[in-house]
Image (cartoon, rainbow, N blue to C red; front, side):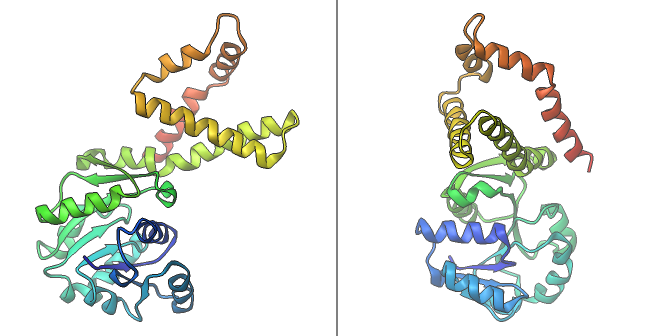
Length: 259
C-alpha cells in the first residue's frame, strides 16, 4: 500500500527510514508533506521518500494516511483534507488523538487506528501501542501491525490503558537515557573514557533487558543471581534503595500521568 505522511518530524523520519531500510516499503510508496518545503526536500533526498507540495497531494496519492503532525495542528489539517479521506485508512501517531476523538471530528467516514510509537523505532527496537478500539478493515489491521512490527514490537491495549502505556514506553526512553548518563558519569569519575563509558553502560542495559525479555525470568530473580552474599553488587543495590531508585521511577510516571 502507498502511505501519505502528514508531518515529517523526528518520529515520522525514523519510521519511514526504518521501513525503507528493511524494504517494508519502497521509496515510490511513501509520500510526505511538511510546511517547510526546503527541509522536506532535503529529508526526501537523504531518506528516499517522495516529497509532496501540499497536504492534499500527499493524501490524494496515498491509500493509507499517516497522521504525524503536532496534535494541535490536526484540527485544521482535517478541515483541509476532509473531503479526500473517505475510503482511506488513517494511522495516527499524534498524542491524544484516539479513535473516539477522530470520530468526533470525522464521524465514521474514515477508518482509523491510533498508535503510540517511541524513538527506539529508529534502530528497529521500537514499542508500538495499538489502541484496541479501531475501525480498520481486518486486512488493513494485519498490514499495519506487520508494518510497525518490522521496527520493533506491537502491543495492543484497551483505550483506558493507552495513557499509562504511553507514559512508560513513550517517556521511558528519556528516563533510561538519564540512567545511562548517570552510570557513564560514574565510570568517567573512576577513569574510563567518556565514549567507552557510554558504550559500556548502554550495552549492559541492552543485554540485561534482552535477558529478561527473552527468558521471561522475573527481574528480581535475575537481580538476585548477581548479588553474592556480602558482595559488591548487593552493596550497590542497597545504596540504590537507600537513595530511592524505585520511588523516583514511580514518581516520574506519576508526574507524566498527572500532566
